[in-house]
Length: 165
Image 1 (cartoon, rainbow, N blue to C red):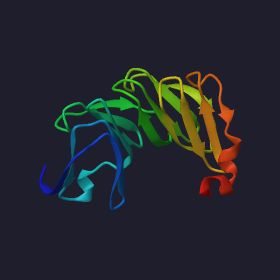
Image 2 (cartoon, rainbow, N blue to C red; image 1 turned 180 degrees about the horizontal axis):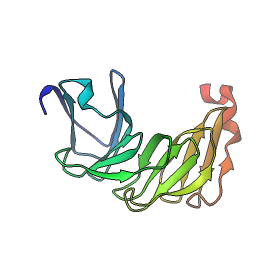
Image 3 (cartoon, helix red, strand yellow; image 1 turned 180 degrees about the vertical axis):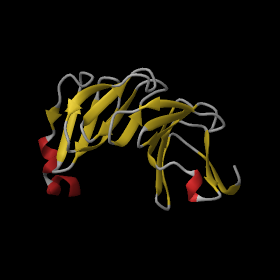
Image 4 (cartoon, one colour; image 1 turned 45 degrees about the horizontal axis):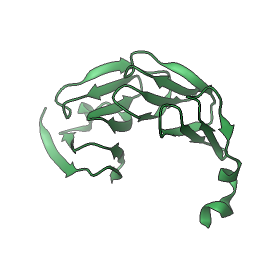
């Protein structure tokens, strides 16, 4: 594939990177490279990106692409319908937010299981396999401490003055 531009950067712990319309949030990766093909027709639309334990996960509208070697080789996995965003805690455990709710995988996308039904969700973050957060439209802010079996509304997240103080 012809390359017109290439961006290389070193990563320290966790950071966010925005390049034009492409946003990348990376955690605990030693180095990463974004390669831009010569034309947009060479790119499948990327919905979201994540990285964990040396792997990169690229979420597309119909599949999840996974690379463990800096993008030289990719494997594909199916994703639930209408994916909006994803988060991976490690090389196997991840979550994808869809128009139907929040799904979890424990095998890098081979199987997905819905753990929360909601059309309002936009993003999720997990601190551990048990402890996570999901946020969305209409000031939705939820927390789980039992791997998604139960979710609790974070009431204070909807109060704007608390965020400003």
